[in-house]
Image 1 (cartoon, one colour):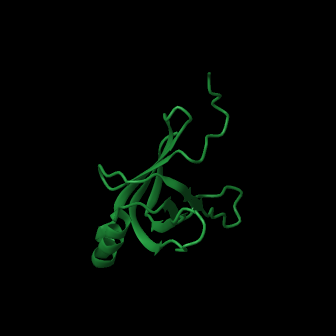
Image 2 (cartoon, helix red, strand yellow; image 1 turned 90 degrees about the vertical axis):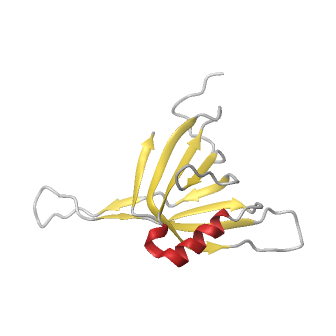
Image 3 (cartoon, rainbow, N blue to C red; image 1 turned 120 degrees about the horizontal axis):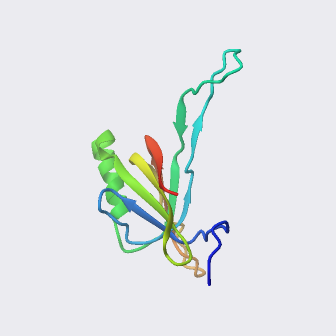
Length: 142
């Protein structure tokens, strides 16, 4: 079966690597906030010139697993400040598990962690969330 290249890809095929050669122990179910925004400056002229660029914070969500990798990174950020910056690579896979797009967050640091809502009722998956601030976003493959 051939796959159309203009068909949107499933959102559940996401891999996140935090740091060089690192891979998290669980797939992330949601990545949001991959954005850059520029503000053009015109000064009344017909041609706008680029102004400053802003990089949005990225939210990563995953089901709780028996791993302390995100917690260790948060602890390092708290203790080391700016030196805790890591390269974070986010890869979107297609139906055949081939990588189709890869974004790289440059000098990324965790700025907020939210643990799961814990309840003895139901069978919902416990989700942890970390918000990451970075100095830049690059599209590596796309």
